[in-house]
Image 1 (cartoon, rainbow, N blue to C red):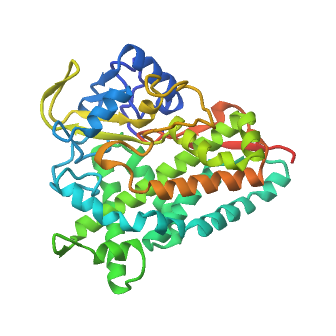
Image 2: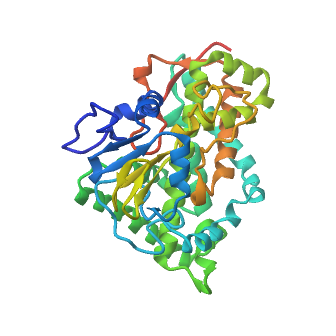
Length: 408
């Protein structure tokens, strides 16, 4: 739930939408479908003015347009951040060209396929350990929470180890994720305090790495050079914030949504159990149908966008999940086809800011599904859909997903 005191529910998604309304993520597919057919670029006065394109064509056009739209802020909130050009608060995702190009190159080596493949046995071991911890509840007939006790625990563990941060702080990292992504309706002074707590934590970790350098992502960022100089503390800290926040919530949500689908679709579950070779194809379809990430831009200059009078510093949401469900691009777009042969989805974004961590996300998602259905080949939703708690904000996924493991 949002924490604002003046929050009012949405009554018209075309003229007053709010992605922080609890009904938005719960009913996102239906909302996007309705808007796509009646109002392909919705508008709301909330957050100082926000636009919401819902067609693949429009989302793609904005994502590739770095002249009319700036990436200096990628999370819609009540405050328009200052323009700390060219770095932004979380480089490279908050950086614009040409600085963005060089800043992005710095993060490519640690996320190269060969580097990520090395994490396969560690991720698999982690998944099995998490599943082991559920066995007593399963044996006694209790439901388990596939989101809170499984999906979210995988990426938070992996990214904390990659960064070289204490794994004992995993719950704190989850608080940071909530503060950044779901606290957008907080009063500005409250939001400032929460973000400052995150920044101070990162600074402390950087200082600890100065004293004790080691082979991890934090030390890597402290050692690399950009334009012949070491990165500033602000740049290092901003990139760590990006990796920490994006590395946790997006994958957690993708895993949770995939398991939500399988809990609702026993035929798909049975097919994957019977033929695990289908899992990679199914993973791509889950990414298409349940893409977790909506990015944001700020309008850089006044201009007309297909009849929409966009003004400087208007927010623009880029719902890549809505683009993935556009029937003009994907046949049977509203159906989840786990053997879909052609699937050029945009779950990892479009344009210059396409997700750096896609290799890691695919690895974690694939292994998480493999291990879960291998351990629990038959499961269903426990209770009703009302018992599923969905996120609020720009990352969509179940926060609580009670499932009942059926007799093996």
